[in-house]
Image (cartoon, rainbow, N blue to C red; front, top):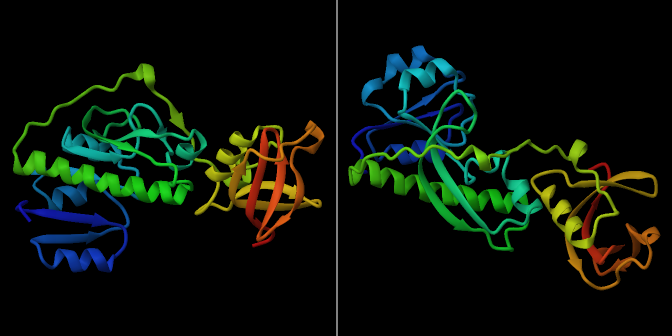
Length: 262
């Protein structure tokens, strides 16, 4: 409400955003394609700051050059670590201390100078990619709010911090049918993290049961009933309440969802 002019560019209509913008001096542009011509036609480029958040477009080089340093992106990881995909890896690596940031968009993906950041703690109850992503999105909104207050209200100058490439890593997007196959030789902690990384909203970690391809979701580990020999790794011991109990190295897994052909 303290920012004089702001506009929203999206690829589809959103009733919540439309309702929100009725209260402010805000335009909404619904476009299928972002072009340099579109921006030059609708905005005073030299007096504009463009912020991408969850963008459905790959923003092209001519637009990046048009805005120069005044084009920023919100990213939910402590860049340069974890460039690319994030949520599944938070579960796979069981990350606790984390950071979201805003950086300058450049032609090199996720490699521009960082201008703002926020430290966060990811508690163990965020145990699926869906819960992790929901939490990170809420932290992104806090991050963006604090940045807007700093830049537009307090009139603080943007500080540009070059990323330290020594710590860089790129995490490719995971696909359940390709990357989600379970290796039953892993220990109970590795398996718990792995199955969790492919949980909702994804289609689950893959294995075979009675010769049929199935997906496992909603698993929890126990240190009881470990396999007595590698032969027993991945063996279903019994049903217990609404779960199956699978013996593995170092403990057992209690799995609530076994999905076969949807």
